[in-house]
Amino acid sequence: MEKAFAVPAFSAPLILPGASLRKAAARTALVDLKESSRTLLNECFRQFGIETVAISANAAERIRKEKFEACVLPLVDGSEAVMESARNSPSNSRCILYGNAQEAMRFSKYGINAIFHEPLERPAALKLVRATRMLVLHEFRRYARIPVITEVTVKIDRNRFSANSIDISSGGMSLKSSEEFGLGAHLEISFALMTLPRVQIRGVVSWRKTKSYGVRFDPSDDQRHKIRSWIESYLEN
Image (tube, rainbow, N blue to C red; front, side):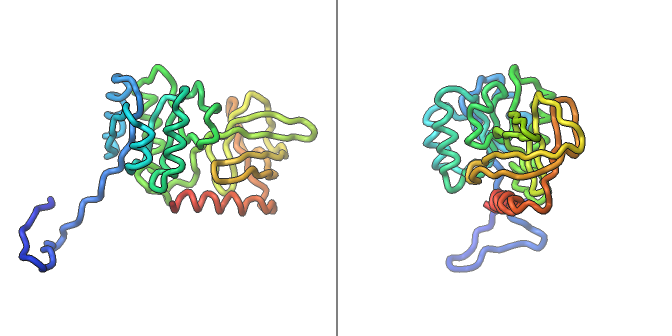
């Protein structure tokens, strides 16, 4: 346990053997949420040592000035100001953004990382926080895939389909789509991610579940380098 010791002027602070400085807790901003949702999310984040801060007034200004590792907010008219403030803030540009599923794609240009479904229920909320906690806690190297939601265009032969990304790594991407893609299907996908201009890359369907698919990028496609550089920058900042 840490203890405070008085030290003479100009002397070095006393450090006991085995003592360590406590790392500042990761903080998550809960912006304009209903009280019931704030209470539930506070309990979920606290289980993983993550502090929550409820914000209602001047949210965009606080997000711009204060340091937060994550931000949960309803995706409604006016939310753009908060997300714009976060993404343009030197200290919060890579914070994990959580939003509600109904409007996620409308705000995809801000790089929504995870979505929750309303009404918010404890099992689902806890599962979502558990799945993303490593990113919030900056344990980046343990997290091989970056959860991020953006619009994706899929091209197979002469057909084009729309899909949503679920997560991305330097080697591939998980997609959600109502279209049927067979295992082993060769395709071409294009997408943009915040600071990553639109890329167009070849891939193959490597796995499939109900309305979700895994695409493995073609190792010979040079666009992989751009995606890898973006991921490394995302993890390091």
